[in-house]
Length: 373
Image (cartoon, rainbow, N blue to C red; front, side, top):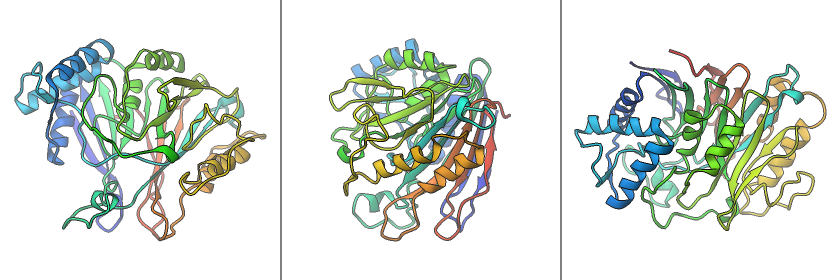
């Protein structure tokens, strides 16, 4: 079953946000996602046959939920799901990439004993053409102006709610019915580079990885094992991921510039994440100074750390800390905070406020639950 409602914004606002709820088998969910992606202009892209065959095999072994949804995509397209020439995932409808700040407050540091993740999603309020340095096409919308909140409730397995601005089968923020929450952020803003080669590869892509975790893992320990055993790839901009669970555990997953994999855990207190490699600069009291290319990553982390250390943090104070590092509405700045999310891992909820445009503030806070039907 498919149900879609508009939950934030209108025709005069920057963002128009829809909540898509899908129930049924993973095959049926894949059909519905593909139908919506096609409505938005998506079409399957050519793939190297040998790579595509290996991709399907990897998904079947390690991410069977995604494999079943690809079978649903094939049914919509009238294709043999075992064909090798076209990729049946990557339901992309706008380009991807982001800045961002995130903060994990464990139960031991929370005023009410609920572990929470809060994050600001920072991105360009421009069209894809403008980001690439050219004039916008007639009628072209800003690339992040039509995000989706997607709740999937499969007949078997974990339900989840995710937010995406770019891939209907990926996500930027997600939580599942077991209370596992995942958010992605740019990992190394100073060294981000345009992609040289964009094509599906074997394993999970950068915006697929959070969806992979909320589909397959119930807690932090399972997520660590899933990530250590997974093949991963990105396209130019490396990302890192804050992962937290309902048992009060959290870590950051990131890869070094040499491809090494790192699980970063900084004790039992709050865990702050912005846009630099934490394994290189783990001490919030000993960070480098920002440069013109660092996008205030160190300043934002210092602000989050100073605000969250010490006394127990209330839900309101967590939101205040995020507001303190939100992007300003300065016409000279290329970024805006396009949404702010708070995950309550104990209650298994995702709360979000969406950017409506300069001078329009944000939408009211909306609360979603992975098991919503």
